[in-house]
Image 1 (cartoon, rainbow, N blue to C red):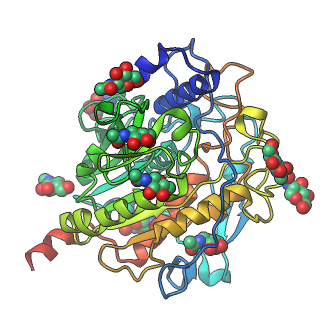
Image 2 (image 1 turned 180 degrees about the vertical axis):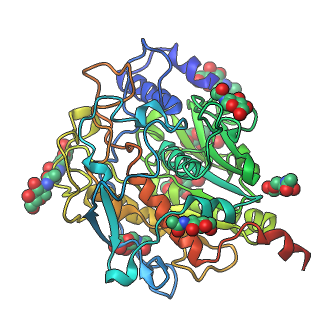
Length: 447
Ligand SMILES: *[C@@H]1O[C@H](CO)[C@@H](O)[C@H](O)[C@H]1NC(C)=O
Ligand SMILES: *[C@@H]1O[C@H](CO)[C@@H](O)[C@H](O)[C@H]1NC(C)=O
Ligand SMILES: *[C@@H]1O[C@H](CO)[C@@H](O)[C@H](O)[C@H]1NC(C)=O
Ligand SMILES: *[C@@H]1O[C@H](CO)[C@@H](O)[C@H](O)[C@H]1NC(C)=O
Ligand SMILES: *[C@@H]1O[C@H](CO)[C@@H](O)[C@H](O)[C@H]1NC(C)=O
Ligand SMILES: *[C@@H]1O[C@H](CO)[C@@H](O)[C@H](O)[C@H]1NC(C)=O
Ligand SMILES: *[C@@H]1O[C@H](CO)[C@@H](O)[C@H](O)[C@H]1NC(C)=O
Ligand SMILES: *[C@@H]1O[C@H](CO)[C@@H](O)[C@H](O)[C@H]1NC(C)=O
Ligand SMILES: *[C@@H]1O[C@H](CO)[C@@H](O)[C@H](O)[C@H]1NC(C)=O
């Protein structure tokens, strides 16, 4: 953090300063200073080289649960009367920036789409049952670690679970039953937050880790010719990762930060050990980081809780001017890219530039597919295709209160209730099909 401030006070090329401001905005998610120019949380992905996706395991490469491939299918319009979201924008755990109706969005049709996996009625996703999920998670821990879109999903999960917790009669709130473990305010966007569901002795935690690996201050004591702000340490997990281990469910994500702007061009260089590499390309660096994450999942996480489930939630495309859908337009967040006009999901997606990104990421991840979880496996929660269709689900112009009128749109994050609810529904379905039950772990240990 100090490195950033030191850098800000020196003379910088305009681009670098801009990137710095963006990264601060990202760090805070909801900028705290009203005077700071507000910028979207992410830059859109630059078109990146896209190696062909190669399934890493012999079983074919699709995520299956209950015999269905949940990653592929279509969005089906649902009757708003019968399929209202489990929660509303009044859920106390939502960031102001995700409360789109409160921020002036008039249409709510984006909430009334149901994900229908291919395979007909036999492949209907089970409805998310908050009570069931809470029961199965008793005495457990559910951890989300990743960038601010991971936080988007965490907040969705909190609200979906909270909808199954009855409020206290005295004041109609659940504040006595669901609270942050050490009293941190939810407006905090650094470090981590741990929400306790007291009736279930369950905590649902979020760890900010935009690269998943350690973003460290750069120590140039070993090489004074190098001027850097930070080091993305490809061989080390963030310091708070010690707390991820032992959780019953761990949902990891990363993606939007793996581009030249957030790394090299903003002075965050890649390091392995104490070796520093100016030329490492982002794709190569990402591969190395994923090796580190996989090694951690197979050793540290596995040892801390042999019955824990580790997921990697795949890339969530953004939609600046169609970049995530047709891939034919060329707008980005900073060239007037817009998603505000969309009122329904796209009928089909060829992925566009960002899914190309996603496929090299998934390849590097080498995640296992489906329910045949081997010890140490990371299971892919493949939401990229379904999410790529949802150009209609972003806050767009309806960003957090105080956003200046001319600010770029947010076509990266998601309104809540909204699209991340469907990711959690998929997660729930996958967990059920794996026989997830946090209550079992202690009896298993003693046998
Ligand atoms: C993710 O799902 C989409 C849609 O089914 C599929 O095209 C893609 O190959 C999947 N990716 C992986 C790595 O399984
Ligand atoms: C949800 O799960 C609870 C607890 O397992 C069960 O009692 C209830 O019937 C379920 N609700 C629905 C709508 O399936
Ligand atoms: C609550 O859960 C933790 C594990 O997350 C466990 O160590 C502890 O014993 C549980 N407390 C009670 C009262 O069951
Ligand atoms: C709501 O009432 C409960 C007692 O039933 C109390 O513990 C809690 O602090 C109250 N919450 C608020 C926000 O007043
Ligand atoms: C310092 O970094 C520069 C630029 O990468 C490199 O050329 C040089 O060899 C490095 N020096 C040492 C001592 O590592
Ligand atoms: C590290 O870099 C800064 C400039 O960023 C420079 O002033 C300082 O002398 C360097 N430190 C060492 C030990 O070379
Ligand atoms: C730096 O990165 C390049 C390209 O990925 C690689 O060929 C080279 O070996 C790396 N050098 C060091 C010292 O890690
Ligand atoms: C995508 O392409 C189709 C036809 O190829 C076109 O009708 C549609 O408007 C395009 N959508 C966007 C968002 O560019
Ligand atoms: C997007 O813009 C870049 C550079 O401005 C250009 O090279 C590329 O051809 C454009 N792509 C499309 C699909 O228009």
